[in-house]
Amino acid sequence: MTKSPLQIARAGYQPKLPAALRGNVVLKEGAATESIADQADIKKLFPNTYGMPMITFESGEKKENPVVGVGVILSGGQAPGGHNVISGIFDGLKALNPNNKLYGFLGGPSGLVEHKYIELTEEVVKEYRNTGGFDIIGSGRTKLEEEAQYEDGAEICKKLGINAIVVIGGDDSNTNACVLAEYYLQKKTGIQVIGCPKTIDGDLKNEMIETSFGFDTACKVYSELIGNIQRDANSAKKYWHFIRLMGRSASHITLECALQSQPNICIVSEEVEAKNMTLNEVVDDIVKVIVNRANHGLDFGTILIPEGLIEFIPAMKTLISELNDLLAHNDDFVALSTDEEKRQYVKGMLSPVSSDIYRSLPKGIAKQLTMDRDPHGNVQVSLIETEKLLIEMVAKRLAQLKAEGIYKGKFSAINHFFGYEGRCAIPSNFDADYTYSLGYTASVLISEGKTGYMSSVRNLTAPAAEWIAGGVPITTMMNMEKRHGAMKPVIQKALVRLDGAPFQFFKAVREDWADDKTSYIYPGPIQYYGPTEVCDQPTRTLMLEQGKI
Ligand code: FBP
Image 1 (cartoon, rainbow, N blue to C red):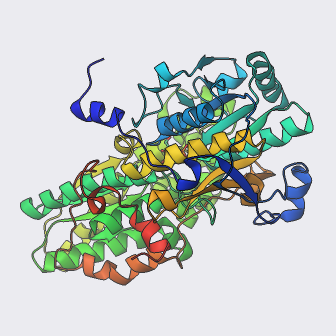
Image 2 (tube, rainbow, N blue to C red):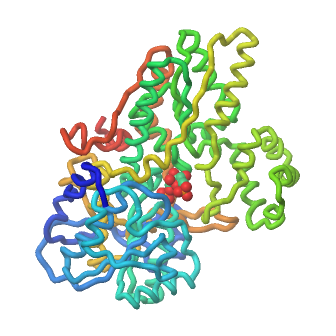
Image 3 (cartoon, helix red, strand yellow):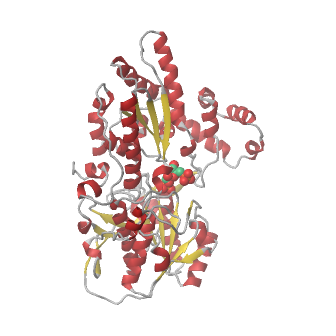
């Protein structure tokens, strides 16, 4: 295969590990743990994995490690660094005992159930070290929720001599991992399950999981693109750029990109929800800034819009939830052949308030809201073109203001959506090191016989040598939530905290970014070689959260 010079150079990059993992390791157990909420319910549902202690690894004496077989699964959306988690598991396993074996289940969790796998040898792994993508074994979104699936999984593990499964995934996939760990313990299968925190969305985090991997690289890629657009906008001075950014639910990506690039406007869904704003109010806020800049002769700017916005506008949330209930397993709807028939059907079935909102939306957006749900029952927000909806509404409002003589500018808008551009980028040094360390930590947790833990690497704003590796019981992150009409134990999603340092920092400066001077920052592309301050900086979010800026 022909490779670029950077691909060749990155193949030789040796990711950094926390000092404690570089030699022999000893396990230190902390105090017993509790779940963040609904303790009695979670304890009842996870009698074998609830309350386990926090774990940290320290340098220790050499010891004999039994041979283990491990199977790894990539689950959900791609995130830069997935291949390095696998390299880290592989190297960790081989360092513990050269006879250890690693298998990869193909195409996500379904590979475990359908017995599709490959053995991951040095030959295979070396092609993927420090690369982006999940193509080494592929990923998928199949939900593991039935006993028959767990049993099929146990069968292939037995056949291959696999004692442990590592699930590399987001909150839903790690919830599955926890359920699987509990089931395998209960059934005394001897199969351990370890999770790794993956998602570009950055919403799988807590005290022990400081960030999910992939967030760093994806945000740096998007921020580079935003910076380039801002330089173009500031040169041409004739377009407003409406830029929607991935992040299914939380606005972490949008906020981080704003902190890196300083756009004129950045919408944070969590704030919109907290202020109980309507779509019209969101539009009014945008219009105010556009009119003010136009009054200073500036008919250009940038607006960052989180992908999940639509679900955080209370009235839209109700509409989407009614649509979710209405369209779940609805054969009548599926049988309708034209868009118009579907539209009429939906309008007639919604509550009067939701029906009014549905009717007021541009037809294209209304249709997008009724498209297929993902296997977890979520509306696929990445397919809803909120940026186009906002452009349309803003243009209408500006036309009214123009007619009233209030707005004298010229509004020309361009829409963008950045998501897939960043999910498989070559991992930044931070993500390359972090993911390798997460994988290496997972292998040590396995060799220590642990199950129901998520691999945890902390102290991430310090140099990698000072990172703290260990494990956190997945049950600590759980609470009870309503899913498909029933209460289920799930990992609590970490949304942007409005009292948190990143949002507070943004709040204090956003008016300056919006007004008539230009505050844009042009971050430029990710650098892999060069001075530390250029190549190894973690996200602004992490730095602010840890009081480093
Ligand atoms: P994960 O939570 O599985 O990591 O996926 C994140 C994400 O990239 C979201 O930001 C986005 O809404 C979604 O996946 C897109 O899904 P798909 O890959 O199915 O298009």
